[in-house]
Image (cartoon, rainbow, N blue to C red; front, top):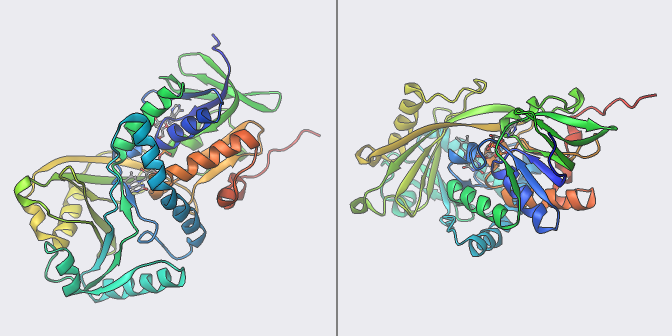
Length: 385
Ligand SMILES: Cc1cc2nc3c(=O)[nH]c(=O)nc-3n(C[C@H](O)[C@H](O)[C@H](O)COP(=O)(O)OP(=O)(O)OC[C@H]3O[C@@H](n4cnc5c(N)ncnc54)[C@H](O)[C@@H]3O)c2cc1C
């Protein structure tokens, strides 16, 4: 069985696949997405922090450039999607407060502050008292913190819904099934075979299958992206009207070596995340995970124990060896990658859509995305003698 050829077939309809298909269709390409459940994936779990500055880590300065480029695009990106679809994305320019609970955390935050300043980023050191003045629900033990007004948030579930509508409006075709195997015809990616035996033909194939991107059959072994699942458990609480405003911005900290954050939405939802576990494709919510998140969040904001716990869920971040995405053409003509976005996939959605649409129409990545070519990990395919 064969269906008509599209210009672009995107394998995976998470936020990265959807934004790629939408932007490609906007540039006049016929685009299709294959995924049994488009709009599922990690974004259904993610907190949606747009945290280029507070997520800065040593050794990730190159990624910082891409994160900032994407953060810069967010206001226009969100406005465009909302205007097109009528969906409010919950984009909130609320800022972030990263706090320290003990002397070690404080020293760590001071170092982060120095790194942020060396990198030309805006962040302000506050005393414990100043932190509590900003966020009165913080524990009395907070020793100090970094105020970063430029780190915002979006609701990833709303973003996903809007991207689905935008794709449909742009004429993107959805095949609700699994891609089983990449089809390679005359040394070129030419589509996929699905698990129900259909052949989906395309001039170009974008592999955007999140943490499963390294498992598509038929991709030459040397080109399989080195992406692995990194499990994150997340809790959702509800702030009743009588407790509002509970927190006015995202609050985060490192408690006993684990990252914890509280992301307050305008709807009253309070997202608490996230564990980081290397356990393969397991998405079980565990008592230990929930306990640790509540324990650490409670140390930061004791009042959370009053709030209804409305949801617990685990998702898989698509991790790469350098924590940065793999974007653009591979050594197999017609095969492109858009994967490995790890803990910044929501933040990186706008820049990824633009970079992939550019690559699909011109064959090249734009300047900002060039350091993230798959070639930095992948060995070239042996050419026949
Ligand atoms: C707990 C947690 C918290 C997070 N918090 C943040 C945050 O605050 N800020 C931020 O920027 N990012 C955050 N992220 C990261 C972000 O959610 C991810 O980077 C992003 O959602 C990855 O999107 P994706 O489309 O690449 O992959 P996925 O969401 O994994 O989607 C991949 C899709 O591909 C499909 N698929 C897989 N294999 C096939 C196949 N063979 N055929 C067809 N379809 C296939 C799947 O069904 C799925 O729908 C978080 C992630 C987690 C788990």
